[in-house]
Image 1 (spheres, rainbow, N blue to C red):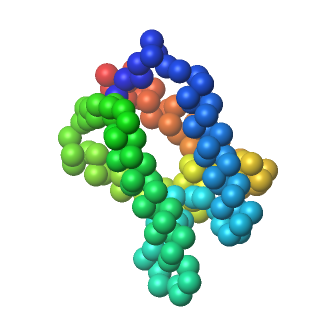
Image 2: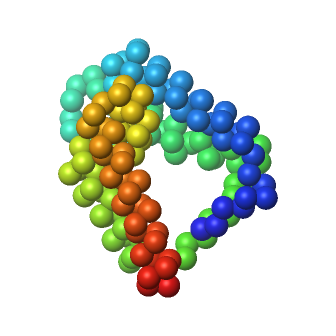
Length: 143
């Protein structure tokens, strides 16, 4: 996947970030919940009465957003540069990491950092460091 820097629009990126920030603040203030995707989806597999509606609505919004976008504009092309087996292994590794890290990048990076959570600060630094190291190894050492 390549970023098309010639068509990068900081305004839309800023607006998207603001929408994410406002949405996570609303979820925290009105429902007392953290907008961490792994926790929300994981909660769908635990049958807690009265806890499913907002989780289903949240995940439905994630699924429906690109479908709604497609009504007004063309979606960017999806290009996968690896095998599906390696892609599945990567997804499994990320899933295991979110369990060990007690959350994902959205839970720690967006919600935890905004609450100045020490655990989230450490987790986010580890996410970023691991991502940079992985890209360096794959692109520069393994080629």
